[in-house]
Every structure is written in structure tokens, then in C-alpha cells.
Image 1 (cartoon, rainbow, N blue to C red):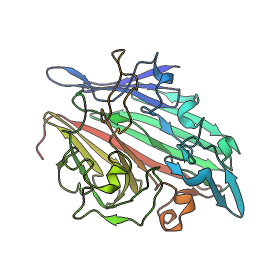
Image 2 (tube, rainbow, N blue to C red):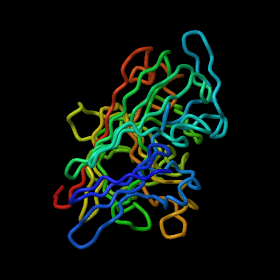
Image 3 (tube, rainbow, N blue to C red):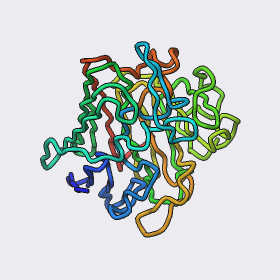
Length: 326
């Protein structure tokens, strides 16, 4: 795997062509240089199974029973998560080498062609992912076109731990969302979108992640937060904010939903010191369409199918701030 570095006076970003992945994010604070990703070494990269920092595609999250029907045809996918398909199967975009289209001191652009019937999906998809560093912000742009109607949902699966601490339960989180999607024990939606008001899923004002962890049956089903939130925003508004005492990260996206996953099953994944992570060691904030939207019309209204010849374009930005007040 090739490594690429984007660096300025505040951030040092390491990327790889394997999975078009974000391997490292070092924030240069006054008294230290701090790694804020839950990650592992390049040597151990292909041993980890938690999708660290990878580009997920062609379809992020779960598809129930590993199949979908589109334009009168049923497509059968790999069952790589019990009876279901997770993050596109055994060899999704996270487990292939992407071509380097261009690179400069502040940007790298990767491309990959998902073949028709690759992992069971219909349509050839030409996908591009660009990472661009500007001041205290990393911007990721996803662009794609398909020659057939196809499920398409590209995202990044970075996990964050802004302190480098054992877990993220004391991290403070804001999510600008008015509803969340309940799921069963296998992560498949099993109820309509539910208002966050009066629930453990209300992060509209700042709250520690651990405050209401495992507080109700919706969380207990999946051992914590592993749910898609419906974002109440326009493209200019803050999507989410994660913070510790001396550092915060602001996330913005054009996507309609944010999967908040509190690393409920990270135990045993290789860390940077030849040891292993524990559960809840990091939190993934994954902008996306809703899980299983291709099989549920009430969720598909928010997106999830790209039409033949249509331009797919979505963005995520991560802004790091070391001098702030909530």
C-alpha cells in the first residue's frame, strides 16, 4: 500500500491507496502532537476488520437479507454480516486498491471502477474520492456515475478519540438531528424514524456520550449507539460536534443521515502500540443514506439509488479547533 501525507502547521493527514483510506490525523497542539483517529499501523492495516478510516462503497451500511430489487430484477449480495450485507460485502471499496488520479501538497484524489455485478450489485460505477487539507480542516468529496440505476452510498469510516484515551465515553457530542432510526439486533431498521425528544438519542444540546449509553432497549439491542440520525439541517449548518477539554471537531456534510457508532465491538482490533483496542475506544460518525433504504420506500425518499448517467456528489468536512467554548 502506498502512503500519502498532507500537512500544514496544524494538521498532518496520512492516506493510503488501499481502500482510499484515512490512516492518521495528527493535531499539532501547543504541548503535543496528538493522534485523534482510532487506527493502526500500515503493517497491521489489513489485519483490522473494523473499517478504520476506509472509503465505504458502493453502499455503506446494511442491506437486509443481502438482496434488493430494482427495475424488476432481484440482486443477491454477499451475506457478510449474519444474513445481511454490510458495507457492500467481502470485497467492498474498503478492501481494494484505488488508483491515484492526482496529488499535490494539499490534496490527493483516488478513483476506482466498481464493475457490473461486483459483489452482486448491478451497474458499472466510476467513483472518485478527493481528500483536501485547508488550514484546520480536512474535506472529503465523493463523486461517481453509473451506467445503470444502482444503490450508491459512499462515506468514510474514521473512528475518533480526541484524547487518545481508553474510551470515548467522556467525549461530549452534539448531533443536529431531530429523529433516529430504530434497528433490531442485527442493525436492520425495524420501526419508523423516531423523534429524539425525551430519548437517550437526543444530542441536540451537548452531552457526554456515556451519559445515556445503554439506557434503553434500542441501544441494548446493538450494545450502544449504532444508529442513523436524520439530520435537521441545510448544507451550511453544523452536522455534529465532538469535543474534549482542549479540542473539538466540527463535522459538516451534504448527506441526509449520520450513523453514530460508538465502537461497541472494537475489542481485539490492533492498535498503534502492538496491543488491542477495547470496546468504545472510538466513535465513528458516518454521513450516509439510511441503512436498507433500497428495500424500504419510506427511507429511500431520502436517497440511496443513483440513476444511470446521474452525477453523484456528496461532501464531508472535519474542522478541528483547539481554542473554543461551547
